[in-house]
Each structure stands twice: as C-alpha cells, then as structure tokens.
Length: 268
Image 1: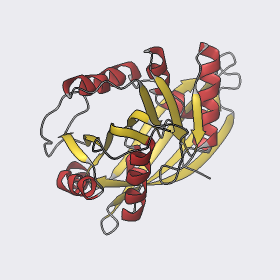
Image 2 (image 1 turned 30 degrees about the horizontal axis):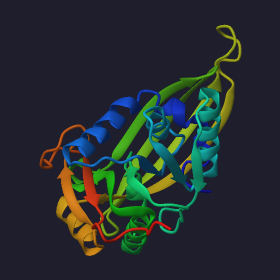
Image 3 (image 1 turned 180 degrees about the vertical axis):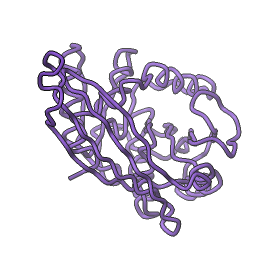
C-alpha cells in the first residue's frame, strides 16, 4: 500500500482548511520575483489535485504525478465534477517519464520528505531535471529539522466532517535521529453522522492506520544536495509566503531551484 492509500478516502475532508488558492498565488509570486514565466507545470506528488486544479483554472498546462492510484482517482473525480481537463501520471518521483518537457515543477505539502534515503533524493532530483525544459525551475518545501528536533515529536488530533461522516485523526510522530526522519503513525476513525440526532451517529463505519516515514532537513544540507546534483539554488526560505532566511522556529523550508540553461529534457 502506498502512502495515502486507504487515507485517500478522507484526505480532502482532513485538509478542508488548507488554503490552496493562497498557496498557488504564493508560488506564482516566487516565479515573478525571479523572472520565471512558466506555461506548463509538473505537479509532483499531486495528491487529490488541490493545487493542480488551481493551476488549471489559472491557465497553466498541468501534468500531475503521484504514486497513489487512490489519490489520482479522487483527483479525476474532482476534475470531472468541475469540468476541467487534467493530465495525470501514476508514477514514483524517482523514475517517472514524461512525454514532453515542462517549464516548472512544484512539489508542496512536504512531499519531498518522503524521499528518505540519499539515493532516493539523488534519483528524484535527476528524474525531475530530465522532465524539465532547459532552465526549468522547481519549487518545493520540506520539514525543517531545527524546530522538529526541539519538539521531540508528539501526538496531534484533528476532527473532520464530510458527506454525513464525522471522524478524528490521531497522528503520532517519533523521531529517528540516525535516519533523520519522523515516523508518523496515523489512526483514523469515522462514524456515520447522516441520521437524525441519536440515529446512527455512533456507528463506526471505518477505522484505519497508516505509517509514513518523512525526512527532515537543514538549510545547508539542502543546498549542498541540490548543487551536487547540478541545480542552481535561487532561493531558500523559512516560509512559502515570503522569501527570507530560515529561522529556528520555522517548521518548513521552501526552496526554488533551476536547472542550468543547457541541462534538461531535450525538445524533440
């Protein structure tokens, strides 16, 4: 089972409070500030299309890539309901192949952290570079090691509702120092909430668990890895919504990098 396999059913309800339009606008701001004018976007680890559908609405040609077939199925259903055309590819960031080069790659929601081993990172960075046009850009975010290590991990709870269902997700994070990753264990329970008060509201309809390993990074480590793989780092920030040097309390790092103008997928 791939990450977010069984959880795909509840994914959009769990992240209903996520402001995808705001995040999409923030990415566009990075492009503008750095003189980038992409027309096509490679939406990496695209999930159920929260960002990808925003790109399509704004006139970009989008190819979404994800290794979870369940998440892509949800993406397709949403696109059909909205009357939007989407191109989707079920594939792993380490070895996917595209039919034509794209101008920009975007990988948000810390999905890059699922590349937990150094070999995984190298393979993905090379694969993404090959999928971009020469001079193409990549923007992504990851967990920042500094505040995570100080926190020591921990437990969080989140309640959600969707279509007559109410539920709660409990996530427990244990830090693995040697591997430099957080092991996140998700437990989701959902109850029928479609009847009148007192009717069916206590009937458990789903209970599932998934375990995800997510790598955390330090700024200089990221810069070193990217430059070693032939990327030019344009900016490394402690926030998606503003470009500034990372601070100790920033939970995420955002990076904008570019392939050299002579390196990338050749246009046939």
